[in-house]
Every structure is written in structure tokens, then in C-alpha cells.
Image 1 (spheres, rainbow, N blue to C red):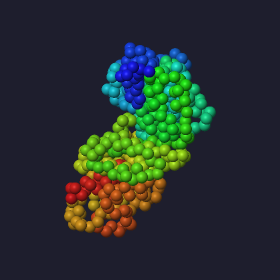
Image 2: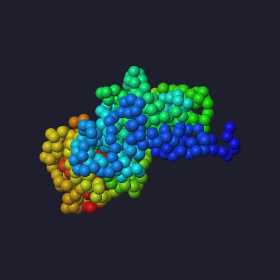
Image 3: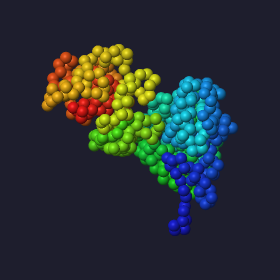
Image 4: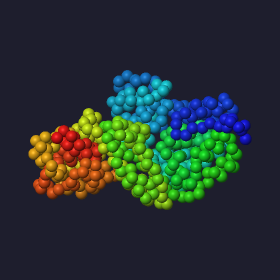
Length: 475
């Protein structure tokens, strides 16, 4: 027992302060890992050297402390990944496929490094998994293995994770064996470890391992929901030096559920309002709604894992129920943007062609693109963020409706969060209060045409509502 009021231990979870925590613990004689081990797990260059020394599967790499001369290439083939050596949350991290991409990526990454150093690595093809573990006197106990859902290249945006991972026991065993080798290589003998592991054509390879519990809701929410284990409490027990037997007993799962976390995002702009919170909370098996933005905040299309609009978490007895609940709840949350806004208008005016970032909400075929151009212009004419004042004045007091576009509506396309056309139109209707599509050629009152459908395909329901709000406010 510690004397009353004395410090028993120190720990961190979901942050990049593990080296600071280890330094304090070491100097105060508290349980924990050595400062040097924490540095190994905090600096990606040191981490890669440890893995190379001990034969732990990981990508080839090189580091830079300044932007190189134009035309510089890494000493291994494209594609490559560029990131700061000392940051987290995918800040400053992106893929590069050409020399030009590489120069852009380097200039993006350098400002995110506290030490002004970046690492360039071989790109690892394949699905990615998150691992949490508790380490006590060298014994590694796995506290969660989850599928990571990474999208929006060239960036690496985690739009959610699902636990447990949907892989065979043999595959899981191979992934975890490599992860444990990485933990030992870094010198993590007491504390927590969080890893990103990829299943590549060469086999499992380590992306990164941190000397802490994971962020992104895994250690604090999804693993406890899925297993009944409070892994944060177990990490605290390690930090205060409780017995290995007590810690091991606290990590025995009491249930076998699936937990799913899903993010929701916004196109660029300023948040006017957020609707659908009650609907999201009412979804069976939905557990938590986390909003990262509120009215008046500036929203950005995500380029890292801290620039999303929010997250939802669901837990259920089966994987299908948990995934369905999380995705349904995420689609229930609707963000309306203020008008006018230069960033939103600029986003909608970009055609979102293949390879353009940010991508369009709906990726449609060239045939659909050609059909859009043949639609009647409607009262908004051809400009997605303009308006026809004369038509608005002439039809004042009449209902606003949408010209039908059945070729798109029935084609089965879905947006970033899995909304089909009908779901997006319903979101537009609920936010803007207008009529759903009417038969083409039959346009009672004021009808939206080509510009509306361009805004919907480019910016989803948000783009369409922004167009309508722009029309009404200017009219």
C-alpha cells in the first residue's frame, strides 16, 4: 500500500506522451517501462531500427530532416508512405505514387514533426488491423484485435473499426505473433502496447507500435463492450505495480460480442446545425454518439484521424447487428452548413474527377455523368451555387421540388457512409423541407434540375442542401 496521498503510478492512454510518462516513472522509481523503451515506441525512426535489428517484419525506410532537392526519390520503389517520425492520428501521413506526390507529401509532413524529421517507408499493401495489449513482467496479454477500415487515399483515414477482426484463428495467430515480437523488440516489458499490423503479400508486417493503450475509442469503449473487460483498469493496475496474477484475472473476457465504431464526416464549411442525434441514439444496439463539431465550427474534409465530424459506437451479440447499428446511427447524423461559404462553394464547383481529392460523395460512371449534362437546368441554371432570382420571384409561395433522375436513383450508388440516392434525398427533404423527385417534365412550382443533381453527387446531401439554402437566402 502507498502512504496516503503518495503517487502510486503514472500512465497514459490514447496520447503521444508515453515517453514523458516513462521519464517521470523512471525518476520517481514508479512501476513502468524504461524511458529508452518509450522513446523506441515514440520515434518511428528508432522503432524501425529496432525492428530491423531484431528481424521483425516491417517496411524499408529512410528519414529526412529537410525537404530534399526537386526530383529526389526514396531508395526503394513507389508507392511510398511519408509521415512525421513523432506524431499520431495520421497527422501529416500520406501515400506518394510519383516524384511530384513525394515532394508534396514531404512538405505536408514536416510541419507536423516536433523534431522536424520525417520518415519515408515502403507502402505495405493489404488489410490493416489494430491490436491492444497489456504487458506485465514481459507477459503479453492481447486485449483486442480489430479490423481497421481505412479510406480516402492518398491519406489514411480510419472511418471505423470492428472488433473482433473477421479473420481465421490461424491468421490472427500469425498477426499477433509478429506484433508480440515487435513489442519485445522495443523493450516494452511493463505497461500497455498498441499496434497497427498489416497483412501483406509477404505476410504480417508491423506498421507501428506505441507504448500505450489505443486512442480512437478501442481500449476505452469497443473492447470493453465486446469482451466485458475494462482494459484501462488493467493498465492502471500495471502502472501501480499490482501482482501479475491479479492483472491476468482482470483480463479474462466475460462475453463474446461484436463492437463496431464508425465515423461520420463533412464537406468543407461552417456548421449551421446538426440533426438526427435522437434518431441515432434510438438505433437498436447503438451505445455512444460523439460529436467533434458543433454549430459555428469550421468543418474540414478529413486528411487525418482528428479531422472527422464525429463517431458512433454500437455493440451487439453478432457482427452483422453491430455493424448495421453503427452504420445506421452514423447515417442518421446530418450536418447542415452555413451559406454563403467560399470553401463549400469551391468544393462543390470542383468536378471531383477520379484522382481528385477530396473525392465526390458518389462515384458515378461516365454514362451517368453524360446524362447529368442532358438534364434540364431547372431554376438554379447550370451553376451549383448560383440561383435564378427571376424564377424564384415568379413562383413565390409555390413548393420547391426536384426533377427526377431515375437513372441515378436506381443505379445502386452509395455515398461515403453507404447512403443510397433515396436515403440522401430523404436527408435533403428532412433538412430543407422540399418535395422528393417528381416525374421529369412535370415540374409543379419551382423545380431543381441539373445543378441540384451535380451538387448531390459531388457533396452528398450536404451539397444539395447547401445549394437549396443558397437559392432561398439569395431569393
